Amino acid sequence: MIYLKENNMKKFLLNFLIFIFCLIFGVLIGLGYDFIYKFIYTIITESIKLKEYLYRPLSLFLTGLIYIGFLTYFFISFILSGFASEIFNYLVREMRKQQLLPVTLKIKNKIFFIDIYDDIIKIFNTFIRLFFEVKQDKDKFLKVLELHLDPNVKKEIEQRNINEIYIGNRTKTGTILFSDLRGFTYVSEFYSPDEVVMILNEYLSESTKIINKYHGRVNKYIGDAILAVFEEPPKYANYMDQDKAILAALDMQVQFQLLHKKWKEKINPLLKIGLGIGLSRGPFLVGNIGSENRMEYTVIGDTVNFASRLCSIAKEGQIIISDDIYKTMENLLVVDVLEPVEIKGKTGKYNIYSVKTRKMLV
Image 1 (cartoon, rainbow, N blue to C red):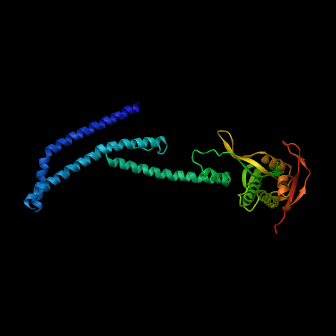
Image 2 (cartoon, rainbow, N blue to C red):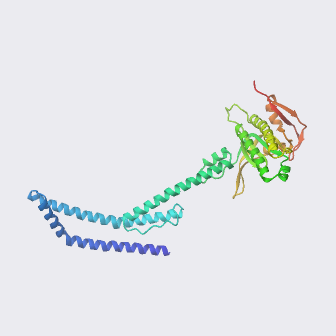
Image 3 (spheres, one colour):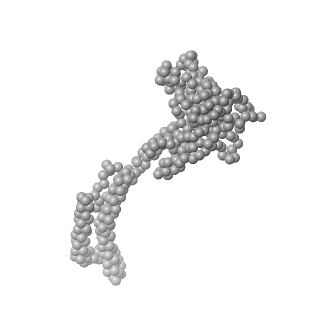
């Protein structure tokens, strides 16, 4: 309400000022026309040699130009500048509301176009500074995003509009890999935090590189466990997701043994820690799980639970696979057939196999 009163007062003062200037300018035109015309006529006749009949039209023309110039200057300086000032102030207010301009940016009251021009330059400089600040923040955010999300999720988020935060649930088919450290609880209890963190980071880093190398992606880290997804490949791809998952699991076990040897040399020769891996294949749900305030992009379903149960059965150095994987990979694998087991949350017994190696293709 106070703002409207102040705005109406400004408009009244502006209109009153225009009226006064119009009145003064009209008087000057009426009283000064003959004087200006005679002055110009005298200058022309004394400085330029023309035929007699040309002096009067030329003097009238120049006098008209002077008055048109005055009128144009007056119109631009006061009438149009007042109108432009109102538009400019409105734009500044709206940009402040949208936080496009800082509240601390001061804009002076404008009477002439030159004042508006100065403020436009100031705002333009502010925009440039804000642009670089936003770009730096964006680059920093994307860098952090790369560290916390797998590349597929990052790419999907980047391709969505600003209001499309939710990533819908979809059913996919593929192979789920669960890996978990054996003896890590003991290590966490009896070794220093720096040593524990070093072991965990090196194991997770090396495992993640291997999973990515075989077309998989890490969905999440759960303490010392890894949940990885090997989705069913495109139609014309020349590989199977379960085969890539087994190759990744074998590679993970080899690299873990190398890391274990290094840790024993660096930390303690008596360090005893192992890696168990479980693999299951089938349909699973991919999407956002959580609350309205915080969501997590993850995979859920019976296939995921089954892989987790197989991982918990696996002893250090073992890779346990489900019967479905074995049936499709039987001719390519060397396995130990294990006793059928009961799986928590499921009925009956299930055939499981411990992968020793994968046969070379000839």
